[in-house]
Image 1: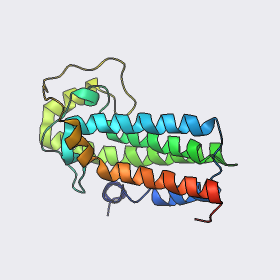
Image 2: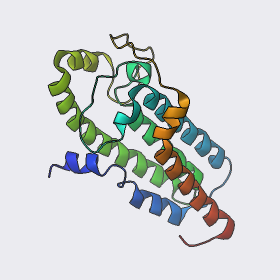
Image 3: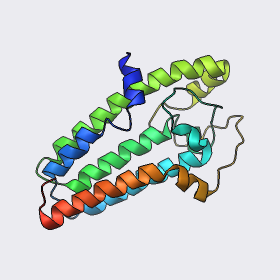
Image 4: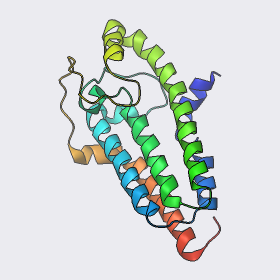
Length: 194
């Protein structure tokens, strides 16, 4: 199996060793706790906004898309969900704190950059096959991961879905984030081994 395919299919599980490491070394402290919460909230808001435009098609283990979404946050970056995830996990590192916080921050950022660039290369091969010139034009105008300042104006005129529907789609991410924060809090309050 291609490493890119493995990472794509298992992208929900690959962060588990990182989360366990963060929990082991966690020792939350101000002001990094506040900065981490702000970063995680920013990352989740990017994800929620992206899901409002792309919908539930983002929760799949099959590479592809029913249509090419180029509006909303997709007009600034081709991969707002992955950008949001990176920001969330960097925020979690700051929330967890601890002696090795900066080393873990670099590790987390490097891991997700590697993983998502691998996954993106696989997805782009598929999207070029599905959408041809439309995707090539989009790819030439909108950055892969780190967003452009002004939104690109393409031909996609879809409207965002209702926030209630978006939150239903995003439920699993919100549950996972809450669970991780709960474990960090337990470790900090009670000094419990994880």
